Length: 135
Image (cartoon, rainbow, N blue to C red; front, side, top):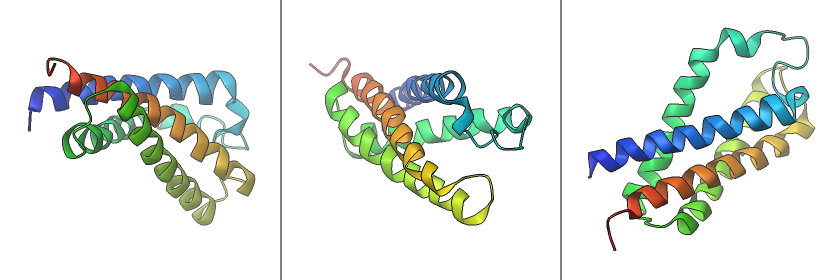
């Protein structure tokens, strides 16, 4: 395992995931996030947790895309990232919907789609990192 590429992949994956998360969940559709219905301040209180889980998501995606699958291009990373994101988005939103009152059922697919988009971009960036210097 090339630890430098894993670390760099995790960093660029985090930037992609976190950056798109801010754009989607804060700028484009703030009314659809978990804090929208009577939980004002929820995201601000747990901001360190958000940073931590985005880093862990980026590490997981890096291990899947770059290390285990051996992806070395943006396009292939995009595909694997989208599948990983869709599955994680479905799992996460179904879990939150089933165990809390923070989410309405109709939002499950919204989160699955946004996870797929975010993880696709992160996977593409990670694939690009792992492909650098291999030509």
